[in-house]
Image 1: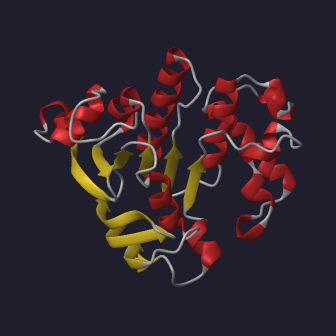
Image 2 (image 1 turned 90 degrees about the horizontal axis):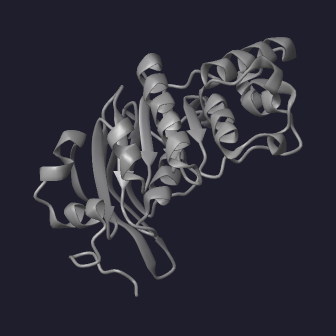
Length: 248
C-alpha cells in the first residue's frame, strides 16, 4: 500500500533521511521505531505530502503521492496525533466530525453528528460526552476522541504518532487494544511511530527500525527479540552501551 524508495530529506546541513526504503503491505500494521531525531515524523510527513523529499519516490497504492487530486489523496488517510491536537473551542463531536463538516467529505450536520457519536461509542465514550469540550476530559479520554476522529471518515490508511505518549500504563494498554481492534476491524493499513515497546508488541504486524536516516532492520514483530541486529537489540533493551551513541 505504501512504498518508499531511496527517500532523502535534509534541512540545511541536517540530513534527516538518507535513503529510506520501506514497504508497508496492504492491510498490515507497520510500526517504525528509533531514537528521537532519527526522522520518523519526517517520514510520515513526506508520505502525506506535508514535506517534500529532496529525492526518491513515495507511492501510495501504486500512485506517486505528488500527483493527482490532493483532497482525494488525503481523504484516504486518518491520523492520530501525538498530543491529541484537539480544537479547544469545539465540542467533542465537532472535533471527531471535523473532516465531515467541510471539504470533499462534507456531510449534513445532523449526519456528521450521528457518525461522530457512533465513532465515540466505538472508542468507549458515551453520547453525552459528545457535547463536552476537550478541557473537560482526561488525557486518556482526549486520546480516545483523537482516535475517533482518525476513523471518522473510514480511512484506508491510518497513521499513529506516539499514540500512548503521556498516558499511564493501564490507559496505554487500553489505547493499544483499541488501535489493534479498530485496525483489524476496518481492514486498514496502519503505520505508527512510537518509543513505547509495549505499544510495538501490541499493535505491530511488522517493525522497522530507523537509524541514521535509513531502515536499519525490518521484520515481523515476532522476531524482535532474536533479530541478531545490534542496533535493534540495544534500542529495545534500552542499553546505554552499543552502536547507537547516547547523547551525554
